[in-house]
Image (cartoon, rainbow, N blue to C red; front, side):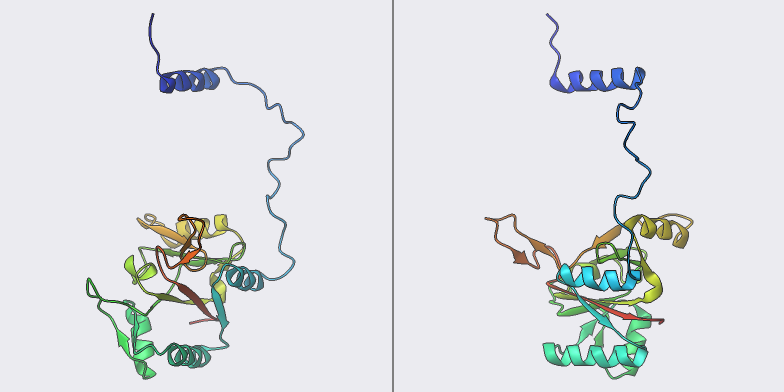
Length: 213
């Protein structure tokens, strides 16, 4: 008797199903309608609310000066000696305001706070979309104890699909090799159902938003 593995049985059923098409038995379901309800308010408000709900901290800044003032206050309260950024534009801005900035990371070096830009902000989940195409590279999104994101209101999109469409337009030649969606500080409850913060990345996530940078 011919023996057939479970995997082969499953693949055979899939092939049979693809060959013999059937009509949709759920004709009464509207698959084209949105999954979520539409926003009753502007997306920026929803982003701020959902980010805070996920454990992140939203800081609205009227202009660049307010952003710097809020950042200096945060650095003072946290007693950070310096902040890290690999983005030259951010580094130049902070140095001009007297903020100590470091732009190189040692293999075993601890980073208290890292500052990056982002690609998009997703209002539905309060998520931050970053990629390897940004000047910050890959490590700055996961390596520091605290991740500070500089963003603009124009980067807020309603849904994740809008962010992905935006990425295709932003990088028309080819998508970045890594696209990451961050929702709040890193956490896990895999071990004995105990919530642990900073398990796979930053313990704290801050989004400093201005109208334009």
